[in-house]
Amino acid sequence: MDRYQRLMIIHGFLVIAVAMLAGFMLIFNLIGGFEFWPGKIIKFDVYGTEAGWVRAHSGGIMNGILVIVIALTLPKLKLGAQSFAWLAWGFIYIAWSFTLFYWIGNASNNRSLTVGGNRLGEADWLSIIGILPGLPSVVLVLILLFIGVKGALASKGED
Image (cartoon, rainbow, N blue to C red):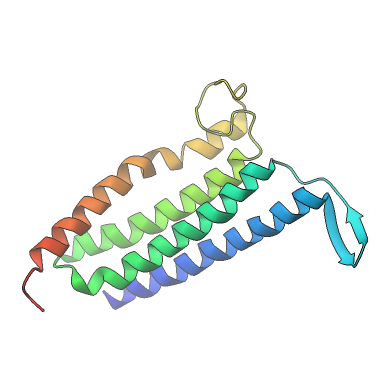
């Protein structure tokens, strides 16, 4: 279990670090470049929208925190070795797949919300790259949360 906790904490921190980079992308998007000296901006364009970078920044931070919090709860759960492995690797996968979704969806015509076109735009190759890794995560997160609840209920009264 210690190994899984360490892995989850490491990946949680890494996901948060990528989210912090999204915060820089948000700033660059808002001001149209990088201010290297007060009032002196090196102008360049950043792909995506302000709202997309806000989501990549705040969503990534929350996903990283989620993985760390789940890691810290592992000792309180009464589960078998395989369930611990599923929780650890599953939440790591979920956090990274959503991180990929945020970054690529911000460049996609349809925000990578569908494989085909939607009211936001037509599908493109980025749509597929952005959504496919995240699709299993939408179901997997519910399954893993159920496993966590089951483990917490099974450990009732063991403190």
